[in-house]
Each structure stands twice: as C-alpha cells, then as structure tokens.
Image 1: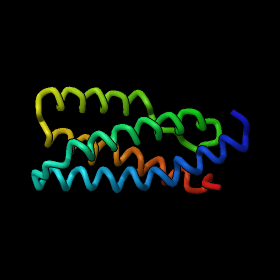
Image 2 (image 1 turned 90 degrees about the horizontal axis):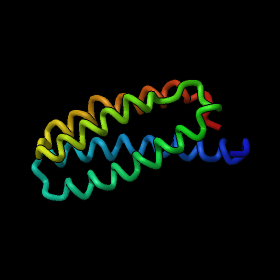
Image 3 (image 1 turned 60 degrees about the vertical axis):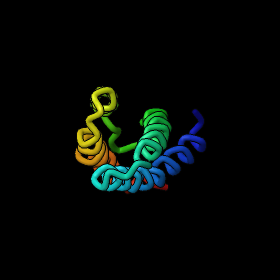
Image 4 (image 1 turned 180 degrees about the vertical axis):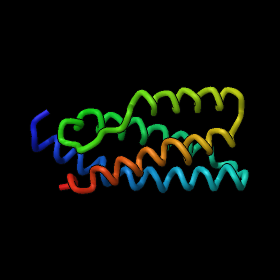
Length: 115
C-alpha cells in the first residue's frame, strides 16, 4: 500500500473507530432494553468491525500502537459462541468491556498520528 493511501486509510479508520464505539453503546442499550432490533445492529457492527480491523492491520506500520488482533479475534469467537447459545448479555459485555476498551485504547495511543 502506498504511503498516501495508507495515511488516508488510517485517517478513515481512526474516524470510524468513534462510530464503532457509538454502535457498541447502542447495541448494549438495545440488549438491556430487550429491543428486537438488536440483531440488525449486531450484524452492522460486525461488518463495520471487520472493515475496521482490516484497515488497522493494513496501516500498522504508521501507527504508534496496533490492536492485538489475536485478542480481538478471540473476543469475536466468544461472541460467535454466545450467539449460538443465545446469550445476549454476554455479547453485550464482550463488546462493551473488551472490544470497546481496546478500540478506545488504540484511539488514545494513535491520536498524535491522526493526520
């Protein structure tokens, strides 16, 4: 990936990371309120997270700190298991207390690299 494209991708991922954390908050709220639309939000969140993780991985050479993708993938595996077991509270907890915190930590470390 050329340097300019990498910077643009990083900037887009950085901005999008804030939308992801808002989406995680929305999902948690929907699950707490037993909102029947939470599966759609979950689906959209997973698609967005997939793009974000790819962008973070592809721009790792210009970041101060990258996400530990193995840890995130383990969380996603746990979410998959929770979906199979219909354990929606566990889904919410993983997103809110594991994935969201990882994204926010990444935002903090990379704030100075945002161009």
